[in-house]
Image (cartoon, rainbow, N blue to C red):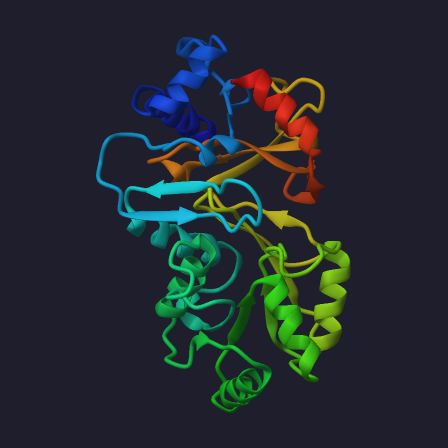
Length: 309
């Protein structure tokens, strides 16, 4: 109940301080006094991040994140206080693994200088900077990776290889690896560099090529400041700051805590933007985990958004 009461409190704050969210709520005749459960909270269509400056309050913008979409307009997340994001990155990670500072992190993705507006690269860079080990770094090729892993093994340092799916596939195609005890966290999405493939196939390929059964997943997006993780069997779990709910395929205002449908996400870390988002992702939510099946059809997205706006 603590999460629910906090969510309702955040809803009221954002209704009063976020012009885009208030306009959306008013357009669908939401009365704040009637919001007494998280199922009744209105969820903003995530596509509005592509066309609106969605902030709560009027403070100065500290950081801007832009999605890596390959076609059309891109989502933009205006972050008022990036230190809150940095703190939440560590909080989310620590809930599923040991302390972030206890690991060396290896980033298989573009460096921050080349992708300054990527929330994902920002996250990996912050994990690297939060590590107690100076060996933590970004790498660009397989030889660098092998040499670094050998060095970490000799020093008995726990490490995590953390990277974009297409980058992990690219680097794993060129050489043979034997990282038996490694943890590899893939962040999903081919970003237009490769054809999309099912998660199960991706994990099988990475497991075979890197020589480890420890293939994990991270689930996040530009519009959210909290990450979910799947440590086994692609069963994702949420941190304390986040909840996944589902909305009906036929009625976007019918929202449930469990079941199958498009994802509506509450992210309390989005206190300075919008914490209640109706996303385009589709899957099922169980008692203590959720599974991702894919994205809802583009025509369904447009139809729902036209109905909601």
